[in-house]
Length: 200
Image (cartoon, rainbow, N blue to C red; front, side, top):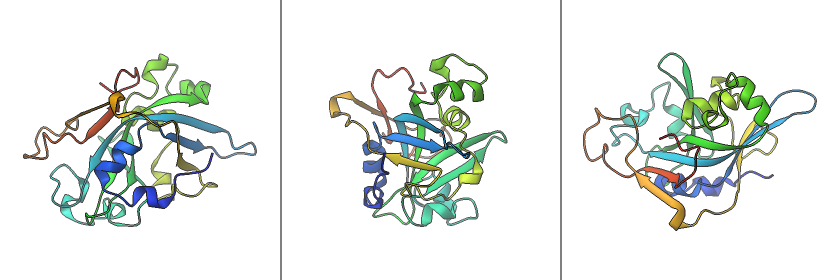
């Protein structure tokens, strides 16, 4: 599996969030055999630059958010609520910053390892949320800034079967109730309709 090219991420953040649906998130673990954990991306959210009241970039290139202002095609991984990692992909064209949050994936490969990392939860609970997928795929802050276009890297995204428009649903982003309009209501969340691994 070859990673998506950097040009894939050099587009409007919103377009990349939609286009990532159906792609394969590949986590290559360390070790002599370099085992892989693979999940199909089935839910995303788009976040823009300083004008976006829900974006980490709203305060400019802070130590945490500076990756959102950097080269596209890199991972932006941050810690939240003092306990969870969240995986984003830097993507933008006409904004000073931008990233796509990966909210959920459908497990495809290395499922037994995912079960172990998720304490033998039911399969539906393995990766149906941004923190859950990071735990299941061993994604932590050590991978922050990694180049997702490197086929030999520990984390990348490969093309998957295309998802037709008829199979895609959109809606407001989750967990941003205190954000002023229009950012609270804009339909910047994308998911594969009917997939049982969608976060909610």
